[in-house]
Length: 464
Image (tube, rainbow, N blue to C red; front, side, top):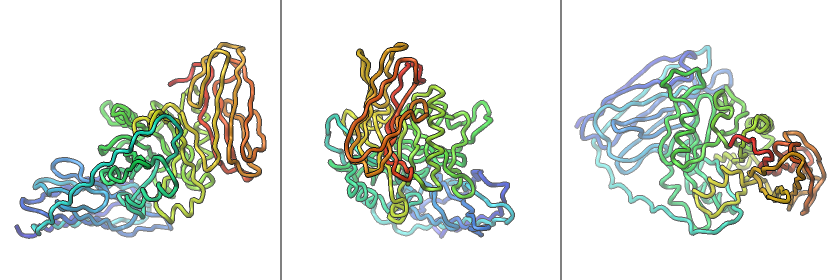
């Protein structure tokens, strides 16, 4: 075949922001390698970034995405290899579509874009043999420490899949999740990175124009093109995405809901009014460093307390949101999730998280229990108790630094705060009917979070 060369140009402006603009083109038979480039200018306007990213579909469906920064996105596909974020494989002839996802177009300056497509019949290398998926050897019931939120160069991180796995091992994590933005192209290599000492959990970060969510335990690409509302009767919504994830046995987590939004962190704040929290039952309240400006963790914690007081039985999580060595150095203090699960497997870790059987910590150990004369509950459980029945609430802490402050939180209000250091324990008493839920936090002398438990619910009214 002769070289196939296609150029598409168009000028956009701020009225095209937060749209998914399709550009279709035809690839002839016998094409073995395809090179595509999306470019635009300017990238910066008044110090803020225009953000346009490509999502690619071949005649058979989703072929990959490039959810990363920059004014130039280059993609090369062949049977043997693909640019990170995309899937290698044959180049089928017929109609292809590049959807340009306009996360942000800054006002005031026209934005010319160009899409260049070059197809050739160059001899493709034989496809490399896929790495074998590693199964983590079973470990029984116990506490497992890990991270539920991480990225690689398949989206916008600076390191590769192998580097993320190496970092997880360096931090002595039992499990780690890959959640690249709107792509699942790295999951095969990620599963192959697992071993007996590291469980690799698969997933993606559903990164919309109006908020982000983690979809863990799911290996297929999720169509993330949804908006807050109002909706047409047949329109796809974020609630549909949550239902699809859970129907596949996965875990849907609202991510960093009170992060700063446009234009500093485009689409990062949660704006789905019907999912406040709607059907969601897990929310990430510790993202990156607790005191970081972008994450808005104090706001996320306050929002979670509001939802808990509305009667929702929620699980609270952390996630490093790691993007590579530079990010790790600047974030300084991460919170990891410490999960009490029946075994170290993807299914059981995610099930335990959904139940709230975990605490999050940057170092201290922390547990919370409650009991009556008839029943016992751990973090995440509901303790059904009649009015005025005594409830004994107890906590155990370990490895707390000097001047750390432990707070007992009841229905969102600190009932007691005490200084803790090293290892110790404490106890309080409630009576049935006095409270809906409680949890414990540990902060450093400057107020930064060091650890928090999940709630214990008391009255049985929680919406599970």
